[in-house]
Image 1 (cartoon, helix red, strand yellow):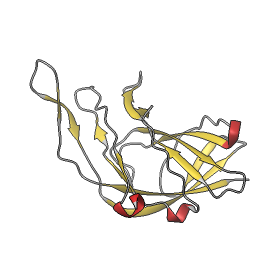
Image 2 (spheres, rainbow, N blue to C red):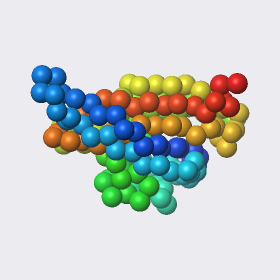
Image 3 (cartoon, one colour):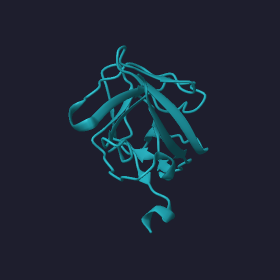
Length: 163
């Protein structure tokens, strides 16, 4: 049985550039795609360990089942209709036994041996009663340039959530 997860994501353009030490030239070009609070329906197939989505091209998963936690490795290829910027994203989420509480983790960017951008070890933890009540996540995404890595992913909650 597939597990459906709805994640609302807001991606905003960012103008900052990261410069190389001692060279004074930008190595990482900041690229952002603005998407208006889009809900994406993810389906996780336990038998094939594939994350299935009608909107995105995604790769194989590495599930972790302990304590109702699943760890997903989402691979976004360049040219994707939704997120053409990032090559790879790793996301963890947690749900309670009543399936009402979700805790989402996203991670810091790094580069793997194939030169793909990945995100690891950058976490925010915010539980909501219903997935549809989760506000949009403002995420800054970076694109590889000259095979260097931009190591910043920033999540920002809407002002309403802080209240």
